[in-house]
Image 1 (cartoon, chains in turn green, brown):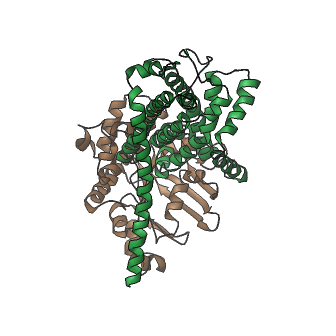
Image 2 (cartoon, one colour; image 1 turned 180 degrees about the vertical axis):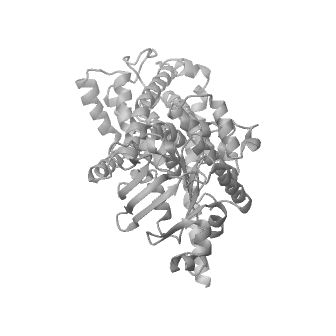
Image 3 (tube, chains in turn blue, brown; image 1 turned 30 degrees about the horizontal axis):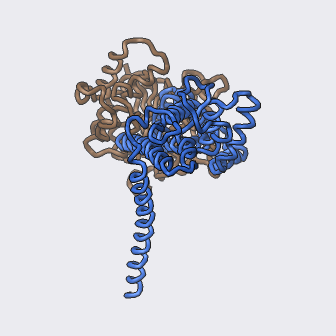
Amino acid sequence: MKRRWCKDVLFRWVCGAVSMFATALLLVLLVHLCRQGWEYLDSSFLTQFASRRPAQAGIKAGLWGTLWLLALTATMAFPLGVATALYLEEYAPQGRLTRLLEVNIANLAGVPSIIYGLLGLAIFVRLLGLERSLWSGSMTLTLLILPVIIVSAQGAIRSVPRSLREASYALGAQPWHVNLLVVFPAALPGILTGVILALSRAIGETAPLVIVGAVGYMRFVPTSPSDDFTALPLQIYDWASRPQVEFHQVAASGILVLLSILLMFNLTAVWIRHRLQRYPS
Amino acid sequence: MNVTPSCALEVKGLSVSYASHRAVEEVSVCFRRHRVAAIIGPSGCGKSTLLRSLNRMHDFDPTVKVSGQVVFENQDLYGREIHPPTVRKRIGMVFQKPNPFPKSIYKNISWGPWINHMRGDMDQRVESCLRKAALWDEVKHRLHQSALSLSGGQQQRLCIARALAMNPDVILMDEPCSALDPRSTACIEDLIADLREKYTILVVTHNMQQAKRISDDVLFMYEGRLVEFGPTTQIFSQPRVAQTQAYIQGKFG
């Protein structure tokens, strides 16, 4: 009896210690970043372009590039992902082919992002002749996050209760009424949560963007999707790889900006999920 | 005045089977117009399966096979030229658990007429349906609040109002009171009595006392087969089949 009790306490302490360790690491990293990045983090950091002088270096080009990428990626990935999920859940015949397709999509979510970069380079940059533009970058990111969006949207659609579908069919609704006017709105909070989490993965992606030709040093803001671009993680990478110590501090400021955008995204996702719980369907 | 009403729904040799077993076998029955018919029987005897085959709610499950005929206005509902959504417009359904849409009270009622492009003043339609479902006085000041803020009994009456909004001829009710408390149950039972004047109503119920209170005819099913069908008074006072008698006396089920 006593020994079992001991094991219980021990196990609890091990679990506690491990979770403390993870949190502590993150905290140390954050404190370190803040101390390094604080010096250059002011309003002009957001409004100035990259520069050879650390004091004047800013993240404007990267920030705008990332915002452009997010907007384009979201506009492409949302309808594609939701339509695929709706098809797989509501229309596709429940056969071996569908299951094969679903397994493949789930696997695609785990493919290293650099592979998507190579795919983007071959198809968008070369084959479609989109060059090193925001189009190429955002289409590559769309491919990258599509599997994640599809899988999470499928989950959201599956969790819409059958009783709602039956209620609508019993009123003489056609399948498209039910899917578009009942199932989709009821699944929307769950779908949006998935989209936002997928986008926050896209924000941090560097490798595929390097491959499709995003630039590291840029002194203008892209004005159309066919312009050259850079993005926050690329800009940070560019600074961090320079020899001067000051630029490492600038890189830390960039990371803080990136982290705050990520935090905002995740808070939005939490908020949407919270609303979902308030109106169970 | 006491003319025997003709059949609103005539079921001829209807069988329904799931992948593994037959749930309804060779049921033939005539449900009279503007009458309340109660379908009773022990759990798993095929009551709900029979009910759901009358407005083609089995269409969404490819493992369900239906054979036989359901004749409604001289047409077989399983005929080749029949468009299932049209069937469901004329034969409405209320489910076991209240299932309002997660929308406002008003939109719950107006949704069916809206997707089916029904003409007429929508405000008026919403009001008259809510009145028929004895819900108007409770919700008239909050038509645009979420239907999910209503109590279970109110939600079920909203679902009845929603079915009425399609102006159906027949309303199928699948144990409409099983999730409700006694007061709400009484409310729904009164409502069924009122609705009989304009609609043909089929109610599946577990509760024999309820069947006795609300119905004109009773259909007793056992293991997928129709055992006895007849006027409620006769079924409860002098059933012809011994099995029916045993069931109403509570000897099994």
